[in-house]
Length: 301
Image 1: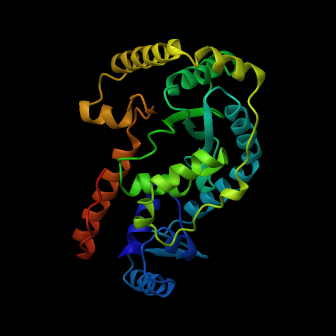
Image 2: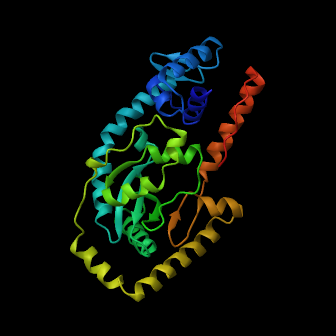
Image 3: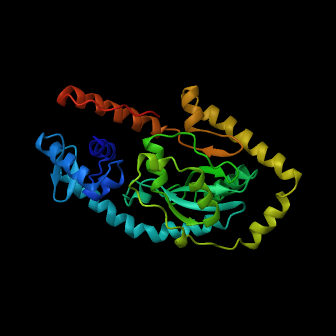
């Protein structure tokens, strides 16, 4: 039931899918196998079709919402590329990718533009702090077009949280700047294609490069010294201390995943959306078992 799992997953985000999309986000052996499964699911009334889209409830407003969001994503994409270029010019930034809903072609009035950033080794927290200061000072702390919530350093590119949620986020990344670092990142993380072997590989030829500003070069020169090691470590410690106080309601294990703060990784996901999505998905599996006697293998966060 690989098609059903895919439809259920995107239904959490109220996002109907086409047959082609279902196939891409599945591990089906062929498009024919997906078509056969979809026909069975439709006949049993487990899924519904409106125009060329499939969903878990017979609700046209979901399709209207998706199509409107697709159009808004197209309009905001130039802004996202412009901000990506700005981020790429900051000290120690090696690669910038669009992530979140925009990377999947959706955007609405309540959304923001998410970025996944790869930094140089040993300077992740300096780079992150400079970007956060820019957001607070020049953008009045608005995250609308500047949501920088995931950083990793180029000497530690492996993503350990291997599940459907993370795999989906990774294969849908839109790399904008930093071909070398992003290519290394994907070479280090081939496991998402075990979930989605039918998803097309990245076209790295379209990834841009940009020159650092004179100010970035100057800042890097200052911190490419032993003092830079101490400053980076200090910034990590004070940020982590602040997060422990601010998000004290998070369980210890959830904090380690949602607010991971190591020398090589900085995540700022206080809602622990990954856990919520996987839990919701498993709840939907249980409902299907009760309603239609379908046994679906549980997913894990």
